[in-house]
Image 1 (cartoon, rainbow, N blue to C red):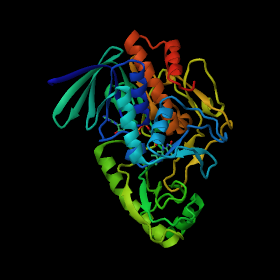
Image 2: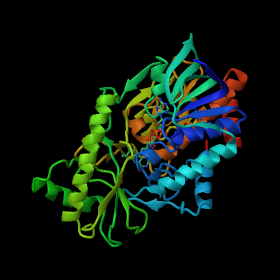
Image 3: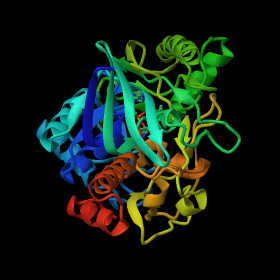
Amino acid sequence: MTRRFSYDVAVVGGGVAGIAAAVGAAQAGARTVLLERAAYLGGEATNSGVTAFAGVYASGSGGIKVVSGVCDQVLGHLARLGQDTRYGVTASGNLTIKFSPEYLKVALDDIAEEAGVELLFHCQVIGAKTEGTRLLSIECADDSGRFEVEAGAFVDASGDANLAFLSQAPTVWGNHQGQTQVATLSARIDQIDKDADISPSAVEKAILKAKSDGMKHLTKEKGYILRRDQEDFGFALLPSIVLKNLDAKTLSDAERDGRKQALAYVEAFRKYMPGLERCRLVSTGPALGIREGRKMVGLYTLTGEDVVRAVKRPDAVARGGWMPEIHRDPNKMGEYIPVEKGSYFDIPLSALRSIQLENLYGAGRAVSADEVAFASIRVMGTGFATGHAAGVAAAVKARTGEAEIKKVREELLRQNALI
Ligand SMILES: Cc1cc2nc3c(=O)[nH]c(=O)nc-3n(C[C@H](O)[C@H](O)[C@H](O)COP(=O)(O)OP(=O)(O)OC[C@H]3O[C@@H](n4cnc5c(N)ncnc54)[C@H](O)[C@@H]3O)c2cc1C
């Protein structure tokens, strides 16, 4: 291996958690690199057509904001690009901020550049070197071969705890029984009539009829078509698949199945949904959206009790405010678990730190959480918050040798995080 680079902080994965981690670390003064295998930032927000930030506001709160910091920097940049970043109320009564994935890609490039983050796209992390309780370096591959990145601290923002797994640090697959929430391939459709009823109930009526008429390749009967105001296009989050693992064969079968389902849904919408008679499939994904896969095991595992009882802590580094939302049955809509309305729970630094490696922090979907807590923290608003916290903790660890909670919180507050 001829190429070798050295940084204070290395972040693996450029989804909402990874960008927040990298920007947070760089703003804390760390020389930071972000490694991403796709050609752009955003992760599932851009790569899987998930186009509404949930969890920036507490569930059912009528507008209590629980996430700020890097999330606000991103929203501010989207607004400067002419995007409407006000929240809207969903069919479940919660507040989300809808966005265009293409504008988000540009906004994320810009804020990374402004913070001085080194961005490496088209690069997959394929291995890791450890010594005792420290992660020393990661092995990466691009089209010019392999290279090594050393850093003082690392953030696993890969969604599926790929870095923890490659480092042989403890991880878990799905919930305590090894089940995961279903994966979904988003389908962008256009030519939706302005006044068409695209509510989950209208979708359900159409899909049940299509199924009873024998239409094949349909799974979820009730679900969201995300669209902003009365735009003529939207993202149907319906084709659903249960994943057993993340190997190439399993994911290839799932992607092909998802595309068959997307076509079937468009056919069903055209036939059974008034106002969608002319709708067309514009694009899928690009990739399958994975709600839940592998998670890092942390010093502490956040629990459903922490979430539903809105537990507050002195060692908090992020806030979560979304009702746990579990999609278990590929044919049914996700279910919500009620929480204390208008409140939020605290996420401690110990849920972000690997139980085994002292300089590895998990962020976003990789945070250590049980089934119910995970169903809340996986949303993107909370992903921004845990990413920001993991990045700042990694920067403090790299600079001082210890991610002392007082220093991490001081730096997060200096960067306008809500803690
Ligand atoms: C169908 C669906 C609907 C959803 N609806 C909503 C919603 O309405 N609102 C909401 O807020 N949330 C929603 N979510 C959840 C949310 O989108 C995700 O949980 C969140 O985006 C995850 O962010 P992340 O940064 O943790 O991971 P990801 O977005 O998965 O990002 C991980 C990144 O790491 C990269 N990566 C992984 N491994 C490597 C490697 N080895 N080397 C280099 N790069 C690597 C990946 O390419 C990816 O870009 C939904 C999810 C799905 C699937």
